[in-house]
Length: 189
Image 1 (tube, rainbow, N blue to C red):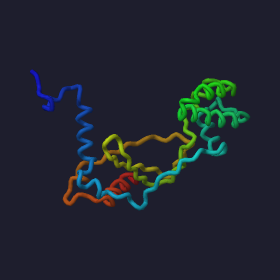
Image 2 (cartoon, one colour; image 1 turned 120 degrees about the vertical axis):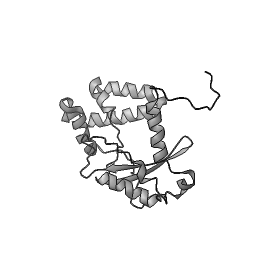
Image 3 (cartoon, rainbow, N blue to C red; image 1 turned 135 degrees about the vertical axis):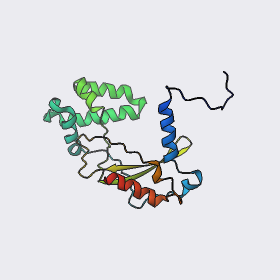
Image 4 (cartoon, one colour; image 1 turned 60 degrees about the horizontal axis):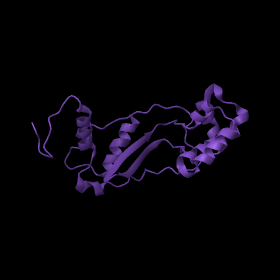
């Protein structure tokens, strides 16, 4: 059976994830008229991205490299880490960076592990961060909860918690401050 463009299609077993995403989008997306009403909560802040010093990065290198870590190579790890960041950020410099990384003499297994790290990972304080970004034509709002005791040098589990629909399907609709409070309360649970 042919369907006209834009006509609804029946749900098939191959599309339940699309339906789940649509349902989540309906619950999470503010109505178009209310999108401007969501204001950045006063407690929110944006982390400042700056490259870690060797002393700040060293515990992360120790954790990431494990038994491959050699204290006498700490300066080399840090220098190669900067080269890797430049490799990803400036494609026109890749040949030069590749030559310098090879000249460092580090084992490819070590370089591969360093490539998983970012030199500007911020040291986030515990609390709730509000993020507001544009993704394509859509304005996207979300919250990041950082637990007490968080340390960027240690592995932490990623917990994704989605709100239930009833928190947002109320009259009157929650304003920006109330939405921020809802998420802050969930993060504290």
